[in-house]
Image (cartoon, rainbow, N blue to C red; front, side, top):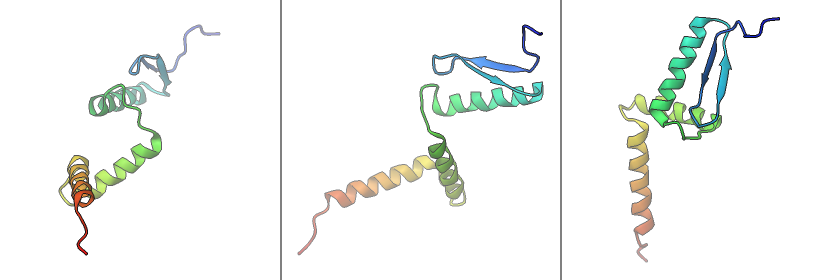
Length: 92
């Protein structure tokens, strides 16, 4: 019985708690490390984004890309729109 696992392991503390990920090959482990590092750069290590929200955000990003816009642009545009309509007064 091996004391150490033979599969490549990715280990770190991106959220303060130790996390381990096992991969079938070193190539998959390297890809996994790159993906996790990209997530940390994009969202920080303390951002808790549920899988459903992440999938929804990616769908929105792809839809906006066709228009030459990004999620930041769309969010600020929509927030401004909501602010304008909430402060308007109906004319009777």
